[in-house]
Length: 107
Length: 122
Image (cartoon, rainbow over all chains, first blue to last red; front, side, top):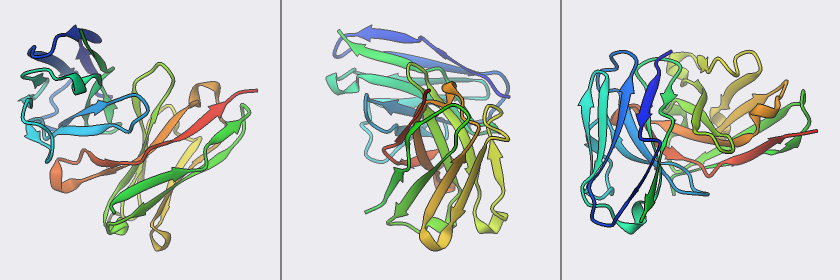
């Protein structure tokens, strides 16, 4: 199985801060990766697909980068509504695997 | 409106069975692969399984943790996805989501339902 190691597991940042979340794959997954945001009681929402493509309707402060084994989700200027848990997901091979999640809190 | 609506969750004893459903609307259900993903209390998202479309012979794939106990199926005439879960364990307690992978946008899940809760307890 492909292991996705996501870090940090949690972070607390202020409005306006730049936030970076990383996922490392245990083997090359090309750009077969997406990023999701999940708020309590809600379904996950796709932010990024194909590692760096912004989902339509998602604010441009969100961006994704990377390929192969290292990937990054960046929030360029954290906003109050960006709280929640963020997950990466690889779909290069079965079983599909998620990172462990990063809980983002607003200071 | 494009949406997925899950149903069928509930309280079940260990070793029991349940069938979850996911009703799709607003898109051509039969064209798409469909998946189940779960979120256990205090844990992260876990992919459960997939059923491909007719063009791919409705083949299925599963996570190791559910192989042999869970079965993903679909009825394209009813625009409905199913998850038959059996030999339930305490650790199967979770919110179960159906999700649509979209080949037109990187094969990640672009549409999710709101989930149906399965609680396994004696």
